[in-house]
Image 1: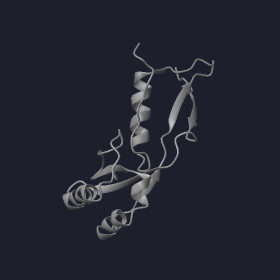
Image 2 (image 1 turned 30 degrees about the horizontal axis):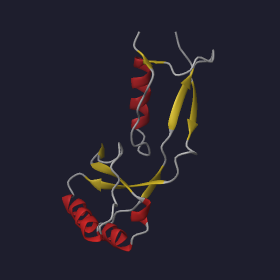
Image 3 (image 1 turned 45 degrees about the vertical axis):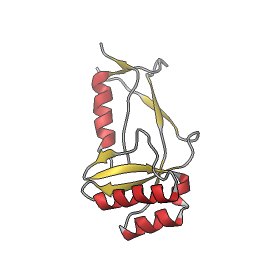
Image 4 (image 1 turned 120 degrees about the vertical axis):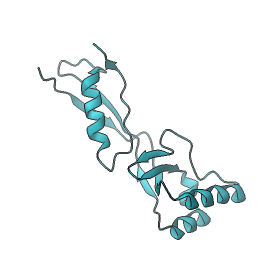
Length: 133
């Protein structure tokens, strides 16, 4: 039996977020960013669930809006040919056709999570409200 879901995705309430992707083997840029933050006494890197996520051969590092407007931060990125990119947090709610919300079988959830995370523009997926029956 197949269950169809509609997906309601709300991105409007989260504001702009920024990230950089750094090759997992490039410790120099990470070292220089940490040193720059200490010298400038600024928080360029945001500690969050998106900080340090491994995506292929890179780490995704969330950065602050302060960082994307900071000349020293941008000069470090330029030195390593790294660009700031925007992302949004997207909350997805699954609804069954009968209107029952917040329910998805674990098998379907894992399958959707894996499919979504194979898309290079999607950083990470978390699933809540799994029905384990």
